[in-house]
Image (cartoon, rainbow, N blue to C red):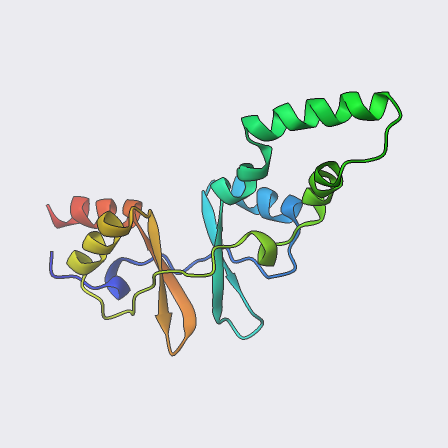
Length: 152
């Protein structure tokens, strides 16, 4: 496969903005049936990525156990625990709070073979494609598989 990122990247992108709420992020991922989306500034510069995992992390099993304890404590009329108030604030978090900031990216000219190596080495599912610092596309594992299917 002698193709580059530009040949196979998805360009019709769902993007998020730093101030987007948890609800907005979840709705965008669900509506478009994607597991992550880039966070960009007004000029289209990549700031980070937010994934389903980023959204779900605060709701894990340990958190559920702590919530039950906090709720029991509240029922007894005690003062709010700082951890409980932090949990309540989860819904007010934004993309800027949740996003992964150190994002591995490629350029439109990056060979697909190099992208495959990056995905495997870093155990990631997609890479943003940047041109002059601006987001122009994303190459996901699905894009690579589609390109392989077309090559036959």
